[in-house]
Image 1 (spheres, helix red, strand yellow):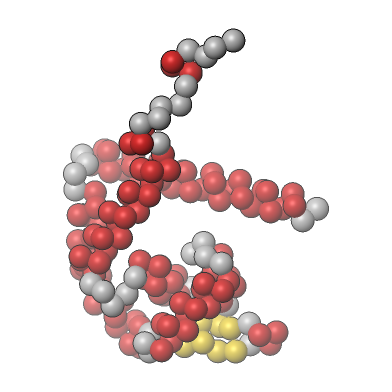
Image 2 (cartoon, helix red, strand yellow):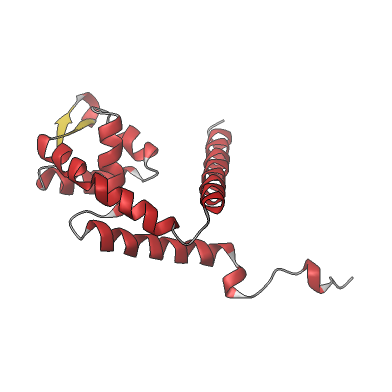
Length: 158
């Protein structure tokens, strides 16, 4: 039985969630660079902020918290250590405990006004209610997909 036009997925590229998410990521990354400069990437910033919130966590836990694979996290941590922003301490079983250095703390503190500006610039085109709804929907989207991935991982290990 042929499906009606209303049952079909739109082929308009700008109606496809994946494309819109990719474009939103490109826009967010460019705004990040415009406001915070080239010295730190959005992923590096996420790692530094997580270390600020959870000092001394191990690298594997950090990877999970910022949604990166272990090898990518290790590479980024090595780069951040070479910049003098973090310290990596080797633990038993080849684990590493990570913490911010004084330079890392100072860099993050200096970024605070810029992070507020970045937040404002990203959301300024939306009304206040839309801003809250946009962030709520983004959190929900990520949390639902993270929970689905965790459930899938758990089922696969049974």
